[in-house]
Image (cartoon, rainbow over all chains, first blue to last red; front, side, top):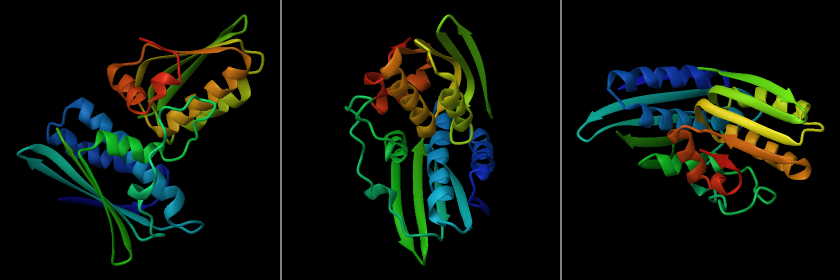
Length: 135
Length: 101
């Protein structure tokens, strides 16, 4: 397992994406799965950077585990900010017209649709989001 | 891992050629172009064959452009890669945007 802890900021979305991608490339993860994981990282990390610590700052820890059978990766995203369960957010109505479409909830919805498993836990004062993707 | 935006404008038609990744960090650049650059525009095109992916931040930017163009003209999204098309399908954006494959 590899782990990275950095300041939860929008700038570090890129740092975390590069960290995860290096592991995925070493594991032979196909391009499509990698791009979907990159989108999930963007959604999850930007959410934490924007909302977890409200007006103050804090850390985000990311881990990645690679599996061989079936091939895949499990990633965790941990912050010690405000308790927030993204899985409790109502899915957006994807059938509405542009005039009626709101912008909330779309990010986590995309993560749920493209990843194989997304699990939220609140443990020891931390939000832990575990994401598994087979490839 | 960034994005380039090229803007072509002629006779009320504006085309943005997007390459790279339209995500949390790059969407604000495009949003700025949209906020500043659509006055009097009748036809807006996004040429995205060079776009590797877009996240929800990118979708929100396209949605805001679509809302503006609903008031004043037409908007088309041109030539998405399969991986990008899949994102439009999952999120129902295929029903909102005019996408030409």
